Image (cartoon, rainbow, N blue to C red; front, side, top):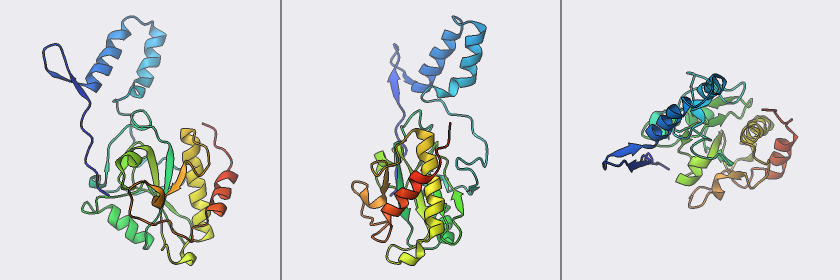
Length: 228
């Protein structure tokens, strides 16, 4: 489930030196400012981070899902990115941890674990904790391409114990998944909302046979659409 950082995107300049993609893009944007009027320059200054390869502004402890708590995963379990400007987000991956909520939080903070999801949902009351920003690539799917393109949601519980997946689990997770879909313009369907077991190459079986997909998808679709 681990993943090494992607190599930098570089090409040689006329003198044979490697040139970083960010230097090319930012340099080109800066050069173009002189040809723009003041209003256009102000607009570009506010949106420079939309250029691929340029990090968006970040606020410590900020969450993507309203009401979620923030608890950062170990930096060994994810890598910095600038999604959806460098990687398109086109799906949600549903996990069940095979353990309690507290264990999920602990292992995702452990650098030796080499894996984490963006969110963890608690069984008893549906409490949501965010551990990786949606901007960034979490190592959760066991497939590099799917990691880069997805948001991972871990749920407290066991695949062979249906009682550990509660109404609170489904309701909190449905609101969370619906929010992800709305943020990135994804249809709320099974093509874009999948189980870990459906990721190519994985050896995991979660969320398991007791995860009620019909119920879950109905609840996801019933969440009011959040306007951007």
